[in-house]
Length: 289
Ligand code: BEZ
Ligand code: FE
Image (cartoon, rainbow, N blue to C red; front, side, top):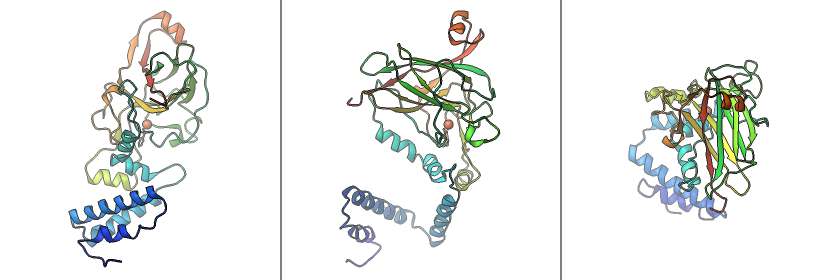
């Protein structure tokens, strides 16, 4: 084994992985060590800073439990989650843009009938959410699954307020009709802060960053023969659209909340006229496309 020096540090450690049977693991570890050593050399890390980093990562681990994943939050605020999403979902230009899954899809959404309400606590301004699922190869996708979840009008998910919000509040799994359409009743979501009372919140405060995400509804859409797609629709005019703390916003995903005065449409959606509407069509790529 070559002896360790500042100049050859990454090479020496990379050599130690020479017998790794899993080729992918070997490549990932080697690259990780090369970049990590480059970084340590670039900033000339002090021993106090090294200890601070160890303490920060230890606290990050301690902040994790069954309902909170502080490491995912760290990945989110460093833009790594969005980068992994971008690398792994190089969809066609016709397909809907993807964005980060987030930590609140931790329970299954209950199947609901088209037109049902997902707002079980009524907290927020009533609104219809409707759209069509289509294939980038052309044509609507009947029988597609549309999984929807969001925060309430106060900016909290059901899983953040057990015993306060009803179980499975603001979640629903819908199946599109013969024209690929879906529609449901909900409330206009509100912007909200990601959990900021842990080490990641400390990092945001130290760097003078706010912890907020703009108002959005999460969507996972899937259909036979098509690649599933995870995305959000963002509410036009929401605060923080231009500074989402997890870098999730894409222009193509922003939609207005429109005021609709149309008794026929109101009757079709089963709501009183006039009503608020967010429309969001989803285009999926074929699996082989
Ligand atoms: C969310 O949209 O639910 C979310 C995404 C990343 C971090 C925290 C929350
Ligand atoms: Fe969210």
